[in-house]
Length: 113
Length: 114
Image (cartoon, rainbow over all chains, first blue to last red; front, top):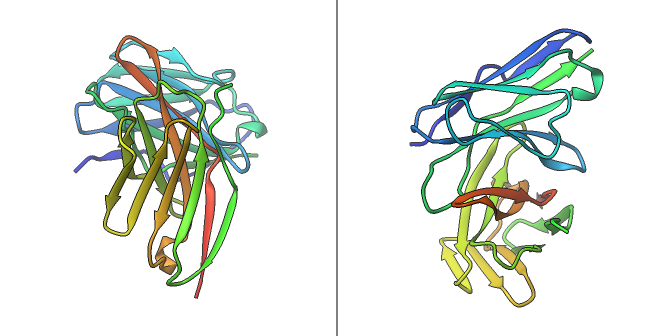
């Protein structure tokens, strides 16, 4: 079975803190993604990575950075958290094969106070 | 544009059929997807259809694809309260070579009344 895990289900941080969201997949997938989900806006792609140490900006990369040092792990970093980054963060992975099917983790609900 | 559009809400009675509709924009999309999100959870892949197919059936789920109108639908037969969730339509979009990303609609919240 495909398994994508995220380090926390719920997280509360203060404005200005540095925040790390971790995502791990155990399927040897090449591609990994970070989305944020907000009511009425659906899923928006923040960053993705198609290989170790490679990253590409998605639709809303401002205020975020990512790290992919190992194939199975993709980290999302909020350098200085702000209240408008309160959201549900979803990680996904995808094998480098013919379909574009993505497999999602359970999500991290981040609240920035 | 690149918007995938779907209505935001649908309410049905238990035992009825649900039909969730979606329109997409990219006629070159190879695959089209339906994902389900239960409250507080991540997205779960329900089914997908290859763009050269018109229909795909999987137990209570039927996917219909009208490529000419760029219209995708998901029919859930005999809808149960456990089907209450948000359903996302997604199309695949090539960004380079063989790499593809998914463009998601905003999701349709299905409420099933007993």
